Length: 114
Image (cartoon, rainbow, N blue to C red; front, side):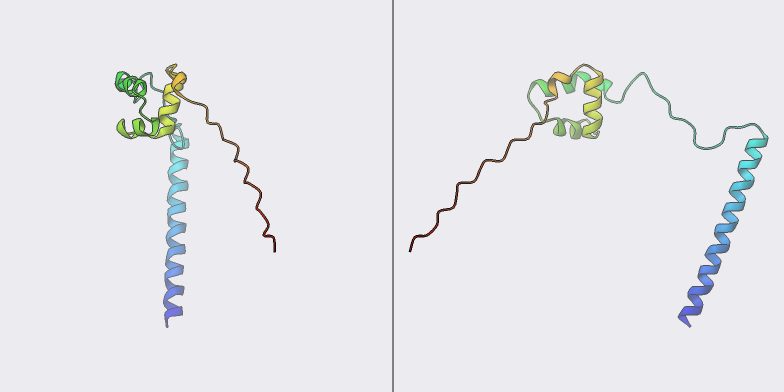
């Protein structure tokens, strides 16, 4: 019995997908015939960035030595957004290059003498 219910539900889902596909195809054909653009609109680049309003606050926090991830939390953005904004606003002197320390060699194990 459960197998029959699953089959019926699967058929209903397949029919619904076909209806959605048909409606989408018809709508795109109408827009194309009307000469309207298709798809998602392109994003725009704004002259004013999200963090520009808090430039002085960010600079003060950087000069105080606050970690950039903490600053990103304070200004409510991702750390990557903050790094990109800092580079665009000529604050790259506050961005330290990440260097990996070489692992220290382990001392040789001493063998037990019997």
